[in-house]
Image (cartoon, rainbow, N blue to C red):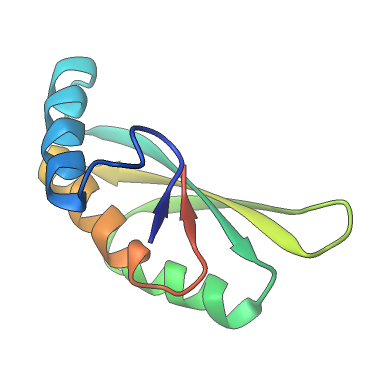
Length: 101
């Protein structure tokens, strides 16, 4: 798992605790929340990400890098609370090669 925001020295448990506090302070749940990921261009990985959002209302936006090596994946999903956002990030983080933004 690679997380671009925050301190690289923070362990995942501390990161998600801090993220929950920020989400609760900055968002008015339930609401649409924009998830952003970067992955090596691979349809199977995109499909794995989409499966995480099964049962959730969402819209997609994907864009390949100039050389086609990477794909930026944006998922705008209706979430109920900060815990749901964190659960989604944790599930996507299990997918090999995904960078969470």
